[in-house]
Length: 470
Ligand code: FCB
Image (cartoon, rainbow, N blue to C red; front, side, top):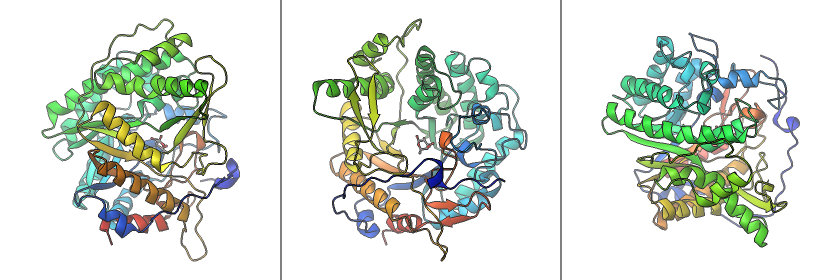
């Protein structure tokens, strides 16, 4: 494997910090704020960690194709090897167990199971997930299966991908197959991870696979994702007694950059055109009026025949939360907005604005607006340019500070009445961060991408003590 450039050199890291207020990082004290049966877990996804991209009959996915196109990935890398989790999963399950986590959220590579997306089953691919589930259960860790973390089989993209309404049937068959094979042991299911990122970054902005830049296509994809979610949920429930089915949305806090009327309107429009665009239909309200208005103004609905997608029937709403996005209007035109961190704010290596109060407020807002039966933080975490020091330690105090404040914010939301039952850290291992390749480390366990050696960071020990309340 080639030596990859280190984190800081790929895209400059400029950590701008205003001094954060004092906060408590004591894991024992923080742990006491949660009920004893609270689910503490780790989250990961197939393409980002598995590697073994062409092994045991796995078919190519759109990420295999996209990552090979010149200029798409910051460090020119692919997920061909990634963390080699496909071969090293026993060690990784051992790490999760050692850290005391009670649950592990992973995604299934669709093209490992069904190399061309439909039709004939690749038994060795299915066997891998059987082994993974069994070893998790053997270690006392509850598996949560996410069916789709963006790595659509390339063969299905060749047939129009998620823009083709037939995807609802393809996805439902795939969901039913997995539920029939693993549903005797797995009760926690997730249909889709971050449908907005997949639809918009992959089909309108072109910075994720499949790399398209066409808004009407992105809108069709979003619509089909909602339909696929609803149909797959029915299929899972038909196979799995006591199934708990949910979906994970990335809802970061959206705030106007200033108090101006223009910025306030832009923030409302963006939040409606992006977050409510999915959540309103999911909770049976149809597409939001403001979002419809701005998408229409911007020409995103040209040639699109939108009807109401069915509601979602969720046992839990998954929230992936990382940051505050501030919105400023560049003009009066819809989508002519600047979205990002406020200059001078505390930021992670992703240039994401660290805003734990935004987690508390987003949980409270979602609960107030949609009243989901249950909520789970299905991702939260931070990238920093970690290195292993001479003593063999990774002193990631920045990440501990990030996690401690977000965990405290989650506790505040529970005190405010939010039915929050779990928290999954993104991520167990440093991994392939999509178009940023291996240049962003989100793991609580460091991975040397040459030797593939795993080294728990200080944050891993901190999380272990939080879970153990010790
Ligand atoms: C989320 C993705 C996950 C990872 C984190 C940092 O948007 O779901 O795969 O990339 O961000």
